[in-house]
Image 1 (cartoon, rainbow, N blue to C red):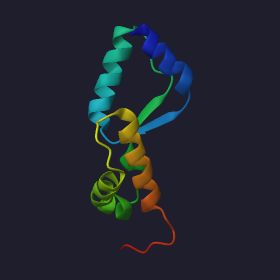
Image 2 (image 1 turned 90 degrees about the vertical axis):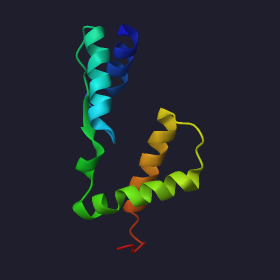
Image 3 (image 1 turned 135 degrees about the vertical axis):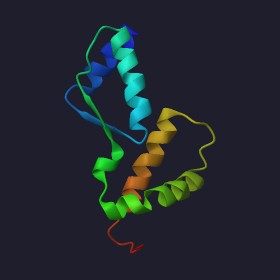
Image 4 (image 1 turned 45 degrees about the horizontal axis):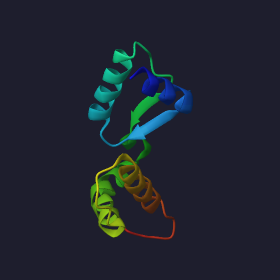
Length: 99
């Protein structure tokens, strides 16, 4: 566990990492770093802090659309990250008028 915590600290030092399951991810991260007797050198934030109220209101529907379009078959961190990234990008596309 110490190896993983050390690697995360080296790769993410001073950065803010965003996730859509903050309570779950924070608990997992805290458990990992406690077992390694280390402190994270980065911060974990809820993705929702990046969204306006209007964007947040449309997030879930758009995320489902993106997930369907990508046809990702397995639940993996990299797949989840891709869905979140594409959903945020689509929410912020200037030429589309959805709302």
